[in-house]
Amino acid sequence: MKNKRVLVTGATSGIGLILIDRLMDAGYTPILTARNADKVRSAAAEKGVAGYALDVADADAIAQICAQIVQDHGPLWGLVNNAGIWLEGDFDAYSSTDIKAVMDTNTMGTINMTHTVLPGMLLRGRGSILNVVSTGALYTRKSISVYAASKWAIRGFTGCLEAECAPKGVRVMGFYPGKIASNMYETAGVERDLDVAMTPEQAADMIVTMLSDESMVWSQISGRALKDYV
Ligand SMILES: NC(=O)c1ccc[n+]([C@@H]2O[C@H](COP(=O)([O-])OP(=O)(O)OC[C@H]3O[C@@H](n4cnc5c(N)ncnc54)[C@H](OP(=O)(O)O)[C@@H]3O)[C@@H](O)[C@H]2O)c1
Image (cartoon, rainbow, N blue to C red; front, side, top):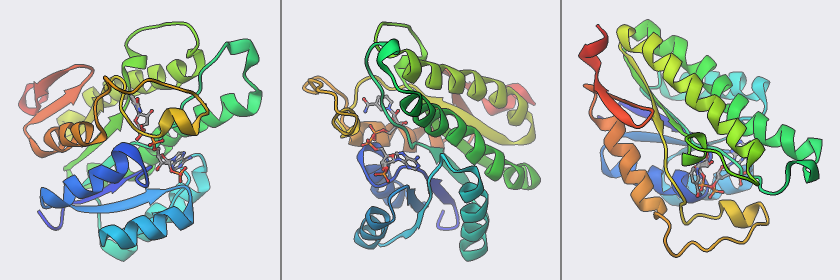
């Protein structure tokens, strides 16, 4: 298990930060990444894991840092595309900068990370990619148009890649949580009652469960046996 290296994006807060602990508890070797270099340094030092500053909205940085990680530690067994940001309010009130940040992080960040990491997994015929999506990709409602768009795109991406990669031995999975008691809303300047939310610990435990059963592919909201594809 020790050589099952799992790169986690957005791992300095919320689900990602707790996931580092849970992965270590389960015997994996997590690699902690997030955008802010100072937070990465202190979180990695506190957890005793390797940490890299990696802004998933920067495609060039993804290619460069992922190559560095593989050179420093060896091939990745897993990738958790967790980095994400919230945007809420009337669509006409959003700035083009806000819209670009959400799409670049939530959507292109996940696609570009996958585009960089997947070829090595396909070459080895083994690996797991888990995208942290959201119930916001399962329904529509007012005030979350761009966040929903960013996650609906990843729901489609995940389902298509699941079918494409499973016959080649690589699992691509989606996790679709509802409200989680993390800093995501506060960071976006939004007040949210989190009394009835899932905890980041519960979310991280679900992710470890999904990663750990290598015979199953968990995408959309139901699971399928890997052998169903081959
Ligand atoms: N909270 C919820 O209710 C909820 C519900 C469903 C799904 N989700 C999804 O769960 C995931 C994790 O969210 P969370 O609730 O744990 O949020 P969080 O506590 O705000 O953590 C977000 C993490 O992402 C990082 N990040 C943000 N932009 C980044 C970028 N461009 N590149 C790399 N890292 C970046 C942040 O680090 P920096 O400080 O370095 O930016 C932070 O470590 C997101 O994809 C979110 O959409 C959350």
